Length: 86
Image (cartoon, helix red, strand yellow):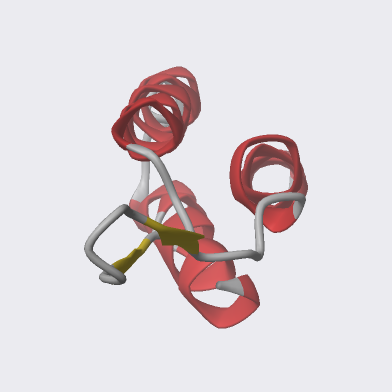
């Protein structure tokens, strides 16, 4: 029972941290940039995407310290959370 509770805690924590990562790096930048030729780019810059990837990878590595199938299922919640919010 303790293992399951830990796995649920890890899953919820990863989902919350992943959503917070999205909010910090991507949610605030919703406008497209227009260059001199009139081409629209964006809304995200390369450093924002790199930041999301590195932060999410770090979160998954920290969550990966838990063992067991319930923990593995919990770790998979983070990528699903960010793709639903995105």
